[in-house]
Length: 291
Image (cartoon, rainbow, N blue to C red; front, side, top):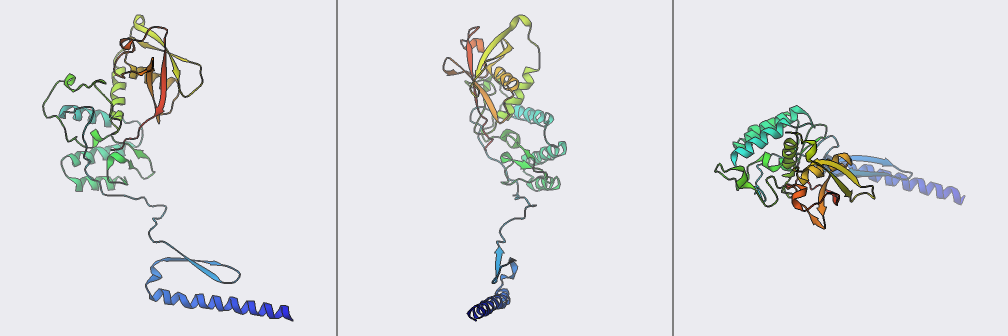
């Protein structure tokens, strides 16, 4: 008998709780809460109502921001107008990843941004289905499939310290060479392209070849041996080591010799290296192009 009374009491409690929940729902709606999404999860005793936040974006939507002009100063290389125009032309002509139509849209939009026509540039970006989460193209643009398109800042906009005179290229050299890398800005994307184009201009005669033994920091061995020209710079050796060692593009190689990091734009033999000596190939993370 006691068991039956207990069962009856539980049923009345569950019914009362469910009734109270159903009665509160229209009251909450009258207070303007009906705009939130409600999902009911049944239990043995009552209905529990969980409302999701309206601030969350659907999974099929990407956050996008209006594009804006990027303002920057070149820290380790001075640019003039002719150099910037040439770099931009070669940059868009040599893209091998991503969709050609997206690169074309980005090129057209950037050209309009240079003239101050942000409205038309934005319409081209939107028509191509490109999203720019921060509004700054230097920080990444994405197509509809989520593919990232990286743009160095010297492609996106002119530096504030643009040199307006047509000085010779040698006048823009720094201590680290003609195409010094601004690792804080993503200029190394341009430097890599320029170095690669220079490497392809001609072949080195066999009598000018040297064999260089390198010890990579990311593995225990064996040492790698690459054959390069005497006049080819350290950056070329680093890239060749990276290719032959199959080091991912998210990393880069820096060359050290006798405890000193070598200048990338100077040949190895000009920095004290002797035939038969071992160089150190330091595998480090490639800096992201933060602008």
